[in-house]
Length: 185
Image 1: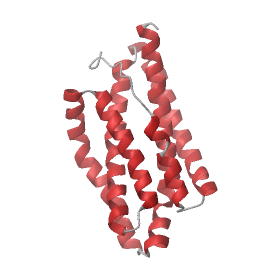
Image 2: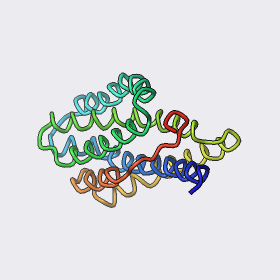
Image 3: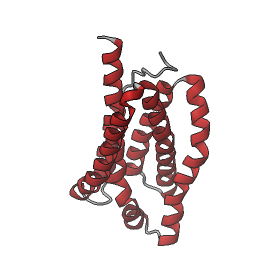
C-alpha cells in the first residue's frame, strides 16, 4: 500500500470515526436527563449541573490535551479518548449511583472535548492542501448525519435504557488508529 493510499484511508477513517462518535453522543445525550430523572429521581437543577459539569471539565482539559498530543503523538491521545468514551458510555449504562453516573458522564464529555479538536488537527495535517475542503466537508456531513440519526436510534433502543449506553460504547472499543499526520510520520 502506498503512502498516499494509506493517508487517504486514514483520513476516511477519521471521517467515519467522527460520524460514529457523533452517533454515540446523539444516541445518549438526548436521554441523559431522562435517565437521571427516572433512575435517580433528580430534579432539573441537579440534572442541569451534572450535564453542564462534563463540558466544563472538557473545556479545561482540551488545551492540555493538545499540548500532550504534540509531545506524545495524536495516535495515542485519540486512542485514549476513544477508549475513554467507550468506557464512559458503558459506565453511564451500568451506573447504580449518582456519583458513578456523574463521573462517567464527566469523563465522557471530557474525552469528546479532547477528541474533536485533535481529530480535526490530525485530519488537517494528513490532508493534501488541495483536498482539505473536500475531506472536511465530508467530515461535517458525517457529523450532521450522526446528529440526525443518533436520537432516532436512541428512541428505538428506548430512552434511558441501559442497553442504549452499552450499544453506544461498544464500537468505540474496536477503533484502532494508524496515524499518518506529519507529526507521527
